[in-house]
Image 1 (cartoon, rainbow, N blue to C red):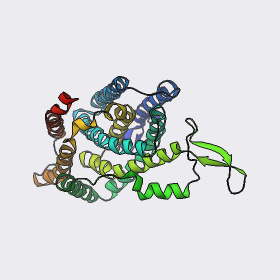
Image 2: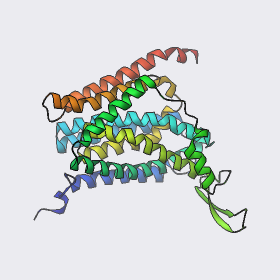
Image 3: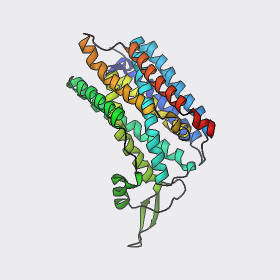
Image 4: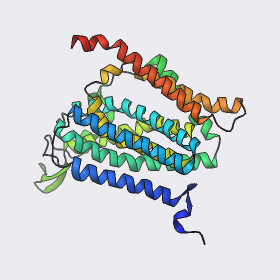
Length: 326
């Protein structure tokens, strides 16, 4: 009888899933028990160190994937990790707008982001599970994902994004009307007990921190509409899809504080991301035209790095005068 830990779950031995879950659990415990202890502002230097730590850990896990599952799986993991990390960077701007709109002090932002990322891990797991089931049962859905990515990339490239007015966001206005909400913060609490102005009875009220957390989770659901199809266009292996997603998201808290102050230096990264989405969607159809089972993972990884490297390099070059004037 085969040992339990060798049993396949979604095509991958259970022990590999347990290694991943255990590592993520340790990281979350470390984040909550050490990094998230007390209310404090996180500076850019500390953010860069933490972000480097999470990126290094994500890359090292790619080495573990290579050792256990082979070079093709490792190339797919790294491609998915880089793409998801870049999409997460795009999410930073929206998170910064949410914090600014709801006037959340920097010393509380790390707490909101920690619980936000915890929620994202669960939500992404559900969405990826649904996506994997659809792809397994209806192979044609992969072409729908690919076509969607191409259209999204073209829209980003030629139409651009509208200016975000978070204060006029209909979801935010709906939540403010429907959610029992205090007008002021109560330390780092998400919920407080207060007398109801209408009845005088003690009841629970959400604080602006909880409203912020809900808005961040909703924002991630919107961004997942792009990111989940993107990673399935790279690989349909649920283990690669989920691990690359989560390792990219785990460092989002550190990435936010590192990038919030310098996001203007990456002015042309969105155009590079648009080209990357078009490429990822197109390679599904290119592989079919070339009679390949899938686009070569190593080539895909190289093109991904080239596109993003060009976007970052061009952005830094075009904004160099802003640094000189600062």
